[in-house]
Length: 152
Image (cartoon, rainbow, N blue to C red; front, top):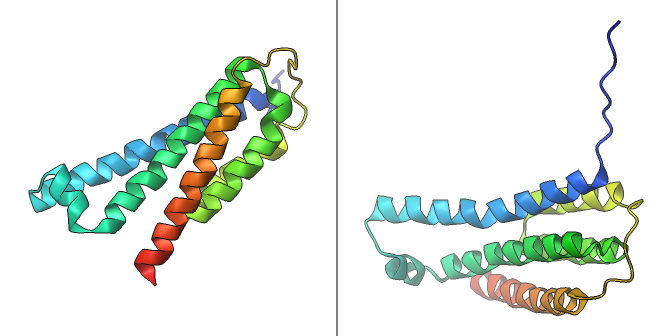
């Protein structure tokens, strides 16, 4: 007899997938920068000075890197009870910088990880995650202001 394959995925796999996605965004942008530099035969300094939007895009891709680290740290600390609020902040941040795919992945992960139990006794590193989240929100506001300033 053929057994049906289970389509159930553990919620931690969604978190791992989100971490990988947010790690790949800066790498993809740096690949684009390298490709563009090879096409124009310029250096990093010349590329980022040629148009100020390139520097803003670099900052917005680094926001994704910081979010990936925060998610990894929360997963390592087993702080899943705080995950919904971090995912909400992450979705808003990604919406502000224009990463619609990141918003969709974050919202899916938010709904799939509701049932995770966490270890509320380990608070080591939680302060670091909170501070990094505040830093990332401030950086998102700066990048959003730079996008508005450059485009209008």
